[in-house]
Image (cartoon, rainbow, N blue to C red; front, side):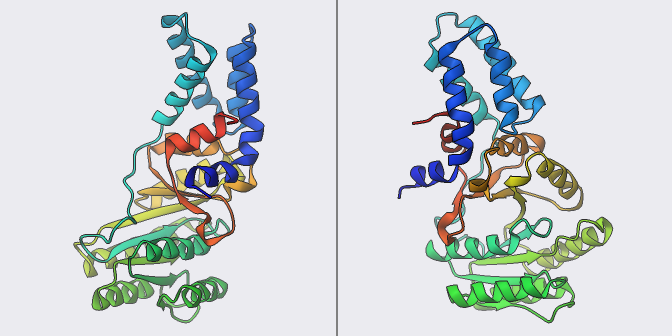
Length: 303
């Protein structure tokens, strides 16, 4: 299955809800067109503010293009939604010029951080990079064991300590091991105890300080993992995590399990942070690099 087809299949629930309604309202073009379009976007969790802005922009464009066809107007809507996303350059095509590249995964428990760590490791490995995993979510024995299993399955080393160990110590060992072995990518899983924000902030700051001390020239990405099925509640998590960590990219998991995939647009708009990857299934290769135009087209058009 090709990349575009895989994304379309993964977004089937959102497309079933949104695309048919969008195409219908554009083709009917009755007096309530703009209001109905706004309601469709809101129903897909694009959010009321962004939905209203997008519809107002389309209305203004159509006033200056009175002869536009339904397809031309739909194409303009597609372009406007795509433009919301902040561009992000791909990583995994080749080994980073300065090793190791460090990827720190943050997010609340239950969003799929550990699974994302394993799937990212598989992507990077399959692209020809050497990878090491760090199990710094030491507060959950299950997370450590899950990451160890990913390491065994992928034949990738996993740095871990006993449950309850200092997460920063695991990060230290992971980066040290990556440098000593000449490994390209170090992916570090972290805890997500957002209920104690000050402790989590201190923990992430300590991990960040160790990474920069031990690998001062290495590129560092802090990826916030969010569960797409919780809709607008994901915005609250984003707001909280940007206060406690230097989030540089977003990963949206479980998009195949929701009909409200428009939340990706709302999240991208909120703090102008690039969406790096989306999860569209349970298989290892169902974590896909995010492409804004492909995503928007997949939810707006039935074909």
